Image 1 (cartoon, rainbow, N blue to C red):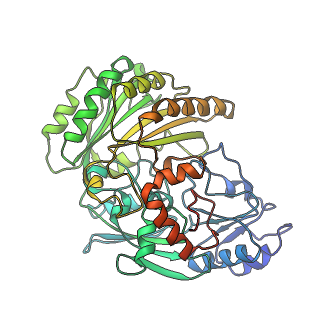
Image 2: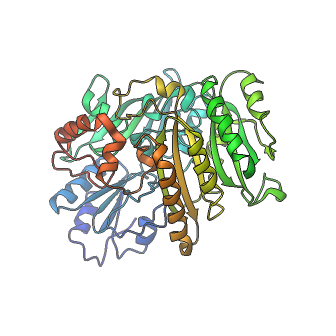
Image 3: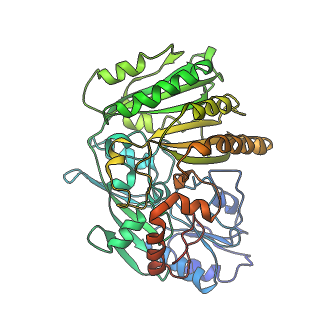
Length: 462
């Protein structure tokens, strides 16, 4: 445990005495490791990082920050693209040591501490043949993904992650601890399901699980010259399929290693990554999907769901440079497809990519005002991602991402999935929540009237 010595930050030694976890100050030997973010393009130097092991640590850290008027950033998996899990000269409340997962197979629920990763949840639930719909990289933190909405391979069948949230334990800015459910602190429960970390620090989540153990899944790669034809077919085919079939479109470069054949390594391609989570052994919808066009490679095969959920982990380890932009789309007109083909072919590095995730199916059958997620009528969530390990390429990946976004944004619905945003300004936040923003601002004024939690995609108190 760090001991907080030789620090110029007042009171850290006193704070450490109130903690079971570690308080890491700038003069500690593990400070640079403790402050690292998944996105190495973001380099922030907090006054201290409190590595919480329980709720008492969280409340002690909040009290310390409030007394000194320090800005607070809350971190779960540190995957936030904009680096909002840290703050210069403020206090980082790091929940990653709080990573317990308890499955209740009889009720098909799971209680997850806020510092757990998606991989930890998948590992625990898969043992019982269960799953929580979540993201596509297993090192992602449950906390940030859930509070923003949560989309992934099971979205069409099971809905968003927030659609499966049953309860949340929360510490408010004044240190109050409460539980939010559909019957208890209902307004806060509504706000937490997509409103981000604006209302308090969630220390644990309770989710509904679904009976999904194994899937038939994998990528089907096509030549870049087939991109327009593939997108034109996929925009009609995908939404017409049963909820059990999920398939997201991507521009990518083939990773330079197994299981991909050497002759395809680093080749720019377009693809659909399919996931069938139903009960049929040879579903007709998936046969039809795989039969389209002239694939370079068909990697679809049966696999445990956790294997699919972690398939991108090796390509995207912590420490790369990242820049991303997102949008919601209801339609994919021919002109938009032309822009996609143009900019997808210009990916500046082999890790750069663009994904169009389907968010129809079960996710679309929830009312637009039932949660803060205002775009239930969208068909896709787009994310454009510039990635490279070399800081020298940071500007190139950033500019490609912005150029791509500016070209396709006119065909969007105006807002974005909050977890796919950089720091893009208040108007963009308001556009993302649409008609639900005013209600969120009212709830914010009740639970965080002084906007203590503002290192986020901020909702200002009404």
